[in-house]
Length: 424
Image (cartoon, rainbow, N blue to C red):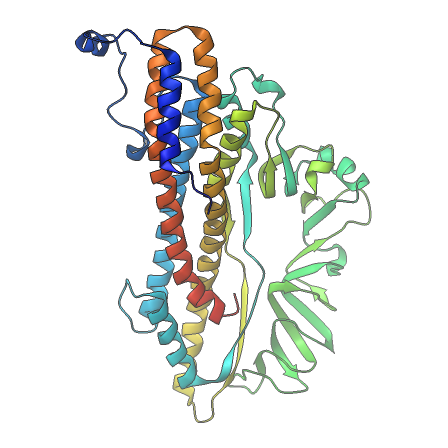
C-alpha cells in the first residue's frame, strides 16, 4: 500500500502556514477561543470531519472517517464468520485462521476422501450511485446538484425506459424466470433435466456414473461424474439443458426484458442510461474539481455492499463412515456453506477497501492543498485558521488510513486461510 511520509506533512504544513503570515492571534488566545478561531478539540481520529469549515477539505476528511467506519464493519464481519466456523469445528471464538484451517482439515480427514469440491461464483459487490452523487455535491459547492451524472463502469439495474438504449448497445441483460423456462444464459437454482445430461451442481436423481454423495434411497445427492437425470441444483449458477425453474440471467431476444425480470445494463458508462441504486463495478465520478475526485471515489467505495454468493460443495465419502457420521457431516456442510458465503462477501469488500485506502492516502496532499489555495485567495481570517487546523490533521490521515490497511490485511490473511482451502 502506498502511504504518505509524515515528514512530508510536517514540511508542507510549515511552508503553507508561513505563506499565510501571522494570523493575528499572538497574545489573544482567550479572545480567539471566544470568537471560534481555534481548532476543534476532536479530529478525524475521534470521528469528527468538520475541521476547517472548507467544503472540499472537510469532505475529504469525511471520506477518511467513512473509510475507517467501513473497515471496522468489514473486520467485524470477517471475525463473526471466522468465529462461527471455529465453533463448528470445536474451537473457541478468536481462533486464528491457521487454527481454524487445521480444525476444518481434521473434520474433512475424518469423513471424506480427498478434498472438498467447491463451486462458487464471486461475491457481487455494488457501490451506491446515490452516495457518489451526494459526495460530489458536498465536496464541490460550485457543482449544480441537479446536473450531477454518475456513471457505472460495470453493471447496474435500470428502469424500463432505459432498456431500449441499453439494448441498442448490446448490453441489456435480464434476470428472472426464463421465457418458457428455457434458459439460454446462466441458470441459478433448480434445473429440471427431462433427459439425462451433465450437471454442474448437485444432482438429485439418477447418475449413470460415480456420484460423490448418495442418499438413503440410493439416489445421487452430490456431484455426478457422468450424466444426471432428475434435477440439478445450480446454487452457484451454470448452464441448464432442461427447464430452468430457478432464476435465469439471459440476453432478451427483443429490446426489453420480460415484465417480471430485473433489467441490468452492462458497461453502463458507455450507454445513455441512468442507474438505479447500486453499481457492480467501478463508479465513475462526475466532473468535479481535481481535489474532490478522490473524495467522491472513496465515499462510493466505502458504501460498497457485497452479497454472499451461492455455493455448491461436493465430496467423496471415506470408507467406513457410518450413517450417523454422514448425517452429522452433511449438517455441518450446510451450515459451513452459509458461513463461507458470508466470509467470501466480507473478504471481497475488504479487498476493495485495502486498495482504496492506499489511493485515498496518496490523494491527501492534493485534496487539502487544493482547498487551502482557495482560502489564501479569500483573505478570511477564520478560513485561514481552519486551514491550519486542516494541516494539523494530515498526520492523523496517515495514522487512520495506515491503521485501516493494517487491520484489513490481518483480517484478509485469516480469511484466506479458509477460503483458499475451500477453493474460494
